Amino acid sequence: MGNGNSKGLSVNAKTIILLILFLDVGFTVKMIHKYNEMKDAGFVREKTFAENMEKRIMKAFGSPEEGLKLVEEAVGEKEEVEKLAATLRTEHASMKSKNSRLTEANKQLLSEVSRLQAKIKELKK
Image 1 (cartoon, one colour):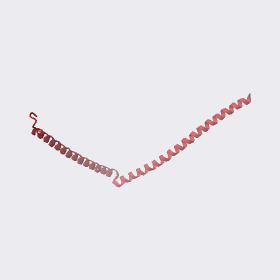
Image 2 (cartoon, one colour):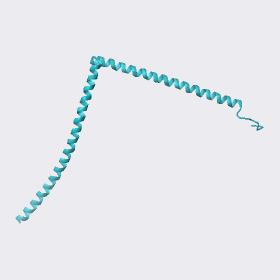
Image 3 (cartoon, one colour):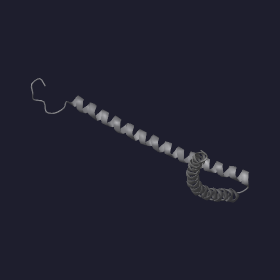
Image 4 (cartoon, rainbow, N blue to C red):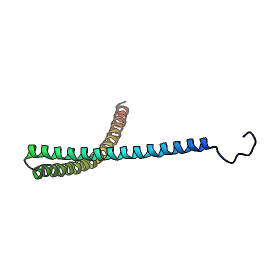
């Protein structure tokens, strides 16, 4: 800097850059190892959870097949209930339309009654 004959960075600057680069690479490798260890631990945890669930099913139902059978029955019942709910929705829609038509007819009949009562009063006079 002083005389203007410098060519590039100084040795100290290059050394610092290399140290920072090595630290960054080392930190990255450390974090990758830590991630892989956590992933493996999660897999083991899921595996033990599945084994524990299987043991609980064995205790509760005697065999996994009986547990699966109960699950299949529940799924079948759920499908039947969904079909019933769909039919009830369509019936609700039809009842709603019938109700609106009956309400309209009732309004017409009430207006007809009031019109006829007015006509009867008129004829009595």
